[in-house]
Figure 1 (cartoon, rainbow, N blue to C red):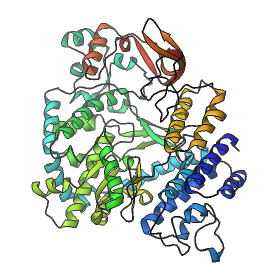
Figure 2 (figure 1 turned 135 degrees about the vertical axis):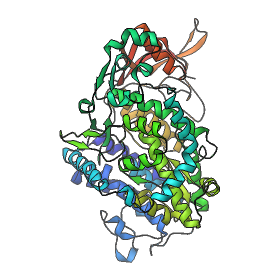
Figure 3 (figure 1 turned 60 degrees about the vertical axis):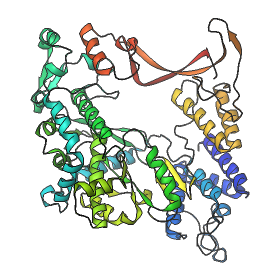
Figure 4 (figure 1 turned 45 degrees about the vertical axis):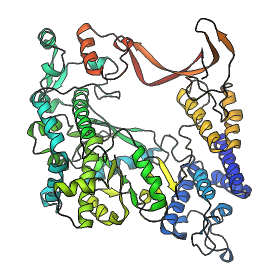
Length: 603
């Protein structure tokens, strides 16, 4: 049993009891007893189902006992509500299961905080769960094999919306492909050829498929002279020699790992070029810029909060979203633009290598890991949701109807917001294309909404503070130390004083004291409502007051680029402000962060 984590959860329970003016001592003992019997999975897997059940009951407007099978029921004379956390759930529901007219927001927030605190903690899954994730990946491909685009009843409407909504954007990117104006770059993540840092910029590997539409001499060299001098090092890979994407697991939760596909470096390089132009085109489009979002989730979050009061909009989430975008849907989306189509599918990996060494031919367009995954899934979801809105309002698809209904639709990845009244037609259109709607995270009734990290009930934010990493043991656990300091500050801001104090005294004491700082400081430290910060001495050289504390720093290694490669990297990354000279001489090791003690300002 993880004693420290359990003690931390007990402090959260204690703070919730104070917030709701009830005693939860019996519930703390109940949690401890069940953890002893069922292990830590009770906290990470079973407790979250209680919160999800409460959310669904809020949407239904009454208490549904079948959603709480993992929790003991109370005596019949005390109603339907389970004995667990009854002190605060009774402030949400009456004994007959009906939703109270004077629902306690503190109780809703408290239940969710207790049950979801460890819901998103990054942890390694068991081998059995990893095997289950592999089979889910294979099953998804098997399911997509039954989708026939030419037999799909929504094909005609999909084509019309694609032409109206994306025609201008695709036309411009198609022209850029023809005129060799795309700006590629290497992504920050891992690649199948195991290149890291500046080694990616030195690579001269290119696929024969890419060469036919994106010539290497135009994209791998900064000018023709370098292409002539260095072009002899080019390696063109025929289709059979191309490496499949490598499917890997990264820690997500104890329930399931996050499945990511690692792309070859040359594919990722070309994908970044197309992604840049597509995203820029959509963000400049008068029609699309206010309904398809790529970097700012604030619009979706604000709408979720507003709709928790008005009920005007529904929030929808999908399961296996990126893995269910069929390649034929993307092809249909861009088929009127031959150069763009050829470029997109020339940098798309056709096969995947699974962790159990099986190789799978892909029917999906791309998994997470491809730079084109996010923009194309957003475009496909936008088109399908818009089809559903046309169905509901009984409108024929036209330029005017698309412009009108686009104002009612907001897409951020697989998070969709649209008018509540149209939820059935939208879901039907999505499911007709083999997508799975995550009903446990989709809300169209009641006063609860959830989108892009914002959970709201009746206009009140009830998003819990998540403990996202396992608790650090030493100062060298840099990511965990940073995450836990941030978690302490979130609990403090929320008014969970005991929890914040517990983190300070009983966990971080093994790492050392932390100063009080302002949010703008580079030091890791505690923030305060008073705006106070520590000052230890005066730095006469910098003419400022400084404090000694921990900062985060990326580990780097010597990785110098030649002049030609430097110029190429400079021209392709200069839009990213600032461009540091050191980046041409050293490379940051991916995922390697460490803590360093230094003197700097706490403000």
